[in-house]
Length: 371
Image 1 (tube, one colour):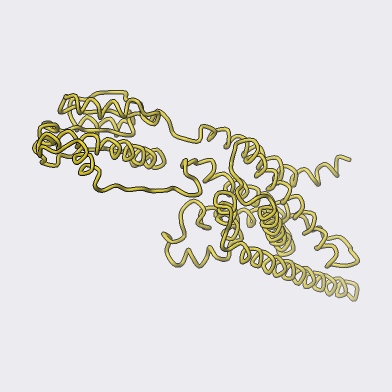
Image 2 (cartoon, one colour):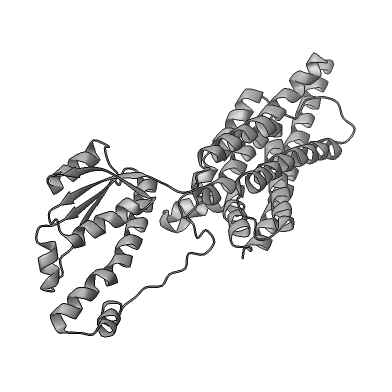
């Protein structure tokens, strides 16, 4: 009994337990879905009703939390360096009077680029606030300076507008963007590591049946793990699944088949189980980054783009996110084909390695008997 438990302990821990725990902890960490209360400081070089209204718009926003009013723009830079704030707003002296004279004054914003996620969110949110204020601020000065009617001033102030639609993830929710692929990538590492030590050097009637049963077993275990991860995200944390479950099920099943076949192949190549798991980890751990899931492939050097094409997760990460957030993926069929072909190539190569190993062992045994 203890021997059986030891045999199946690593697959259960690597494929089922660790990814599920990591999924729950990480999704809970990102449960707020949006960044709130980003610390900011303000330099009020011009203290007028207009500039107070601008600051009030930031104060009323859920995104920002004003923690300090500073005496100079340089102090904003220093606050960023000391991690006191992530976002700073500097209103220059004479801002209101320059605006009345139509001298096109500008506001200075300072963002902590070392905290890229928060910085990106802060810039988008501040742009929304300032663009909303722009027409409302300009209208009275156009009316006063050019004797325009309210209607004409409003039209002039809003003469150039930008309408944008954010598709797929309109709320800029990092949970939706990151988790589906990130957590299944963790599961694939555990799946390949566990499969890479599954082949034992025991007598068997048919090598194809033996390796095939191993591939099938790990495919089912990996599929159950990955699908459970996605179900927890959808039903427990509100990640959308716009395509329905069937495309997700098929893509995940074939992906698990491919990764399991690769693990079995590694198990036939490397006898040393510790070394086999190290190779599996070395191959699959970097795939989340190299696949373009967190950083787009188009921004990578050509050499990396070529390498990434051969990684199974490249053909799973973006398609699963597209299916869940957009409802479809243009490369869905190509991904299924890639997984199928790769899986049979891995499986066939593994059987070839194991057959060669058996023949070498038989020859050595015959030589020993003859001696």
